[in-house]
Length: 342
Ligand SMILES: NC(=O)c1ccc[n+]([C@@H]2O[C@H](COP(=O)([O-])OP(=O)(O)OC[C@H]3O[C@@H](n4cnc5c(N)ncnc54)[C@H](O)[C@@H]3O)[C@@H](O)[C@H]2O)c1
Image (cartoon, rainbow, N blue to C red):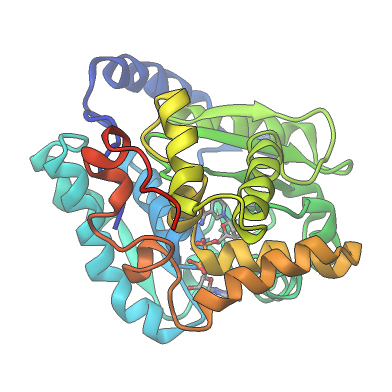
């Protein structure tokens, strides 16, 4: 399911061990400040068991947290347990997780068909549902009434801002964007973007929490769509799509150019496959609508040709490339160069 090129020893490498010691120290001080009380972030409810929700759940459980994972779609939930076991198995096989930790990580993740009980003890709710404003608003509206006062709420949105969910959140002062990257364990930068009304104590708590689960937090001075990485990657992705839509080059050659020059294991099209073409389409179509942008509409139509056939990228084993052995990971992908244009 995931690109094979991730570095080994995620949970167990020397830097992780040092980090684990720091995390332990930090962990003792991480707290939720409420009415003079300080509570650790121990119980986490993740809303959305898709590509990101499962990875975030594993990351938190891998750092000792109790995680409830909920999805509105029962079919997604029924697959989730096996997929979580697959992820943790893969991490173990790659040396990221010690074999002895495997079952305890999985035991700390409960797949929940009903979130109410988990919400009632949640220190932190991580919203990671579809990249759709209304779906996210509904998720916050539904969960809020079941949570205690001190719960912190975060959104994993890629392209919106926490401000857009203030009206739907029971405690807007305890809401911020906390945006993880794919794959969570190695692309371990997390964007921490408060909205103007977020309590600074919540930002501090989330900052310490992020460090304690092996993430590098970037705290934003103000809200901005796409954070840093997505803003940069979005620009590159738009150009990558336009080059192929305009008939300038094949998608393989776009990736080849990027990978060959930067010596990276993946290019823009491989990245879109990993992100999910449905997620990429949602973001592209949203901005095409909002900005009335014809070029964006063409990009959306191009992506839709694949998504309408169920080709969503690595998660369905077919997107721009076929998985689990996509062409860009084959040794000859760069060595042979492109085939001559016909
Ligand atoms: N895929 C990526 O690379 C990536 C990276 C960073 C952030 N994100 C963001 O993470 C979020 C999730 O993306 P994804 O790629 O995991 O999407 P996905 O399509 O794989 O999963 C989304 C899940 O949300 C569920 N859902 C929808 N409404 C719900 C609700 N009200 N309550 C609970 N579950 C609900 C769906 O059934 C689906 O299983 C999006 O905001 C996306 O922009 C994605």
